[in-house]
Image 1 (spheres, one colour):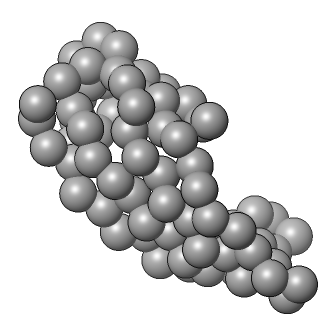
Image 2: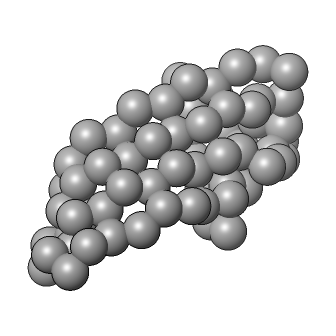
Length: 71
């Protein structure tokens, strides 16, 4: 599980994600974050965020794509 608190298109709130995926021995990651709940003005959102990249000393670097919809 992962929690995000911040802005989505300028709208504040908190989202909870369920993470699935993994990494190889070179720290290449492929993750899927599925929204499982929201608080505040983001409570009506659902969607999936896909992440691919590499974990480096300063954190993950790579491409992020996703689709978020109003319920």
